[in-house]
Image 1 (cartoon, helix red, strand yellow):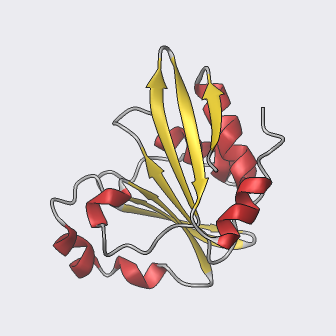
Image 2 (tube, rainbow, N blue to C red):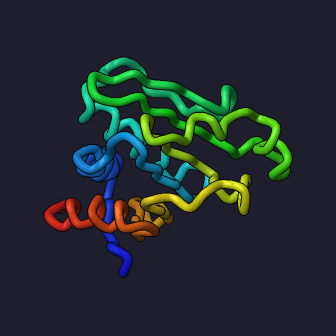
Length: 154
């Protein structure tokens, strides 16, 4: 069953990212879906700040990948928006980052479907007036555990 959250402003999106940080760990995968400007990178910024990264967090739209080495985690933030078809995923070499030792966050995962493995969590951000609506769904048992840690988010 998906969880849904109303995010009235960017600060709420940052807080949701912070809440997600509690459940991320090695081997976890988060897919982020939503239109351009929906707040995917803002959410990642909140997650990274909660993990202790206080430097600038930029969208990997042009680089396709931004790596982060944190005290307890190697985290890779992908943005596949510029992929024209899934053959680009196959030839990118990115598959090696998806392993039990690292966490991966993927924006625009549908650009690599069906070659991208299912995520632990799938999060969709949609415009809702001036704010956003977030829908989060577990896709694996690890994702269900991660999702249950969000029940106190407000």
